[in-house]
Figure (cartoon, rainbow, N blue to C red):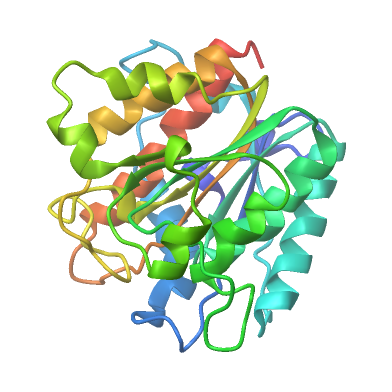
Length: 286
């Protein structure tokens, strides 16, 4: 697999790079669209075409160094992928690097969240996605994508953004004071949700992004493209403020089910990742 953003030489140096990309090509046949196991590779391929200069911050985060680790292959169960990701992200955090996991289905985020919560106290999990993923168990697995946030909730408070689908089980297990539905965001002309969101944050945050948070008009390449998703710049503005207000300790981007005939969603995912790296570098003086 190529290096993220097409970087070469000193800009990918293991010792000097500030950002570590962790590809996790994982999905199961239980997924409606099981091609999420090709998502990490598609994102990195699309990232080869990124411009390194950011027009918003007028910086080039590539100069901070981005090292792409070898993909976590041959993981054939939810438990194995959670354990492997937890170990790998934990190693990255112990090196004082900034981890960026790319998947893969939402199960990928469980291990990353475990590692972040083991490393940091006073931490909030920020989840973006169409589904609240709060089932206790799904098709015999309590580590399935549909259960990911229920697992995370055992470790730290969770704030959920862009939600527009859940099971009855998910409704019972969610905290109504920390969930921001996409429809409510859309109709809130006074932006009250914005302040309420930031009131849920703590000193440290970990961000997990399922690409289904975006409207299917710009992100159709997900397993279940729920209508009514969020616009790109609405998501960016919110995330930028989170990076400014808190110490973001890592993030993951999961859920891409690449379509070989439609590359725009792959590129959106790559651009999003690069933009969030930029926010970390600029607002955390990383």
